[in-house]
Image (cartoon, rainbow, N blue to C red; front, side, top):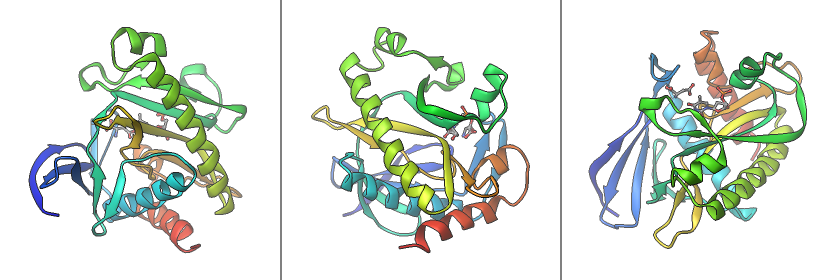
Length: 237
Ligand code: TMP
Ligand code: ASP
């Protein structure tokens, strides 16, 4: 396969065309942003951690029956994925209160929910990714009602697989954000990434934060946290 021109550059990844119209190559950067892009920095080694971890987790999910965009890891930072049209929704699952949930409802972080929750944000930089409900998403034609049902089903399945997986590594999966895409035939697949950028990971015993919150909140030890998660995932297989 041949890598062709860059077709997109996001905050954390670049996407390149290939000689196959159905495949693209994603290249993970060390760049990090937070607070809607206001806070910028780099996290050394992050691109490789996120690429390798995301690919590994997507392969676990595929085995559990969740279709994903993953095709083939090319190198530490580059992966071939199926070209999809992204559904412009950020799908957030929460098991424990944290972040914007704790802030919005005025509750402490760390409350374990009886059942996981789901919410959607409209992926729209100009509007700053506002919270949206599924009826509004359908009204805006961001997705059909059947697609949203499928996305919810897949997102909860991802949660049950990954929550159990991380628990065995001594990590609580607090919450995470997923994105989904459509293949040319309309099939919905899991896309984007699953990494310490997009998940909250807390050490099971100490509740130490092992994810991007260390960058968002200027806590220090950012690189160490990404390295520790890498060790937990790849030290165990
Ligand atoms: P939140 O509590 O700030 O809404 O974040 C919920 C989860 O979503 C958390 O695991 C971090 C992840 N997330 C992203 O991946 N990208 C984003 O832009 C935001 C705001 C959150
Ligand atoms: N990456 C997002 C931004 O720059 C936010 C985040 O992950 O906290 O806005």
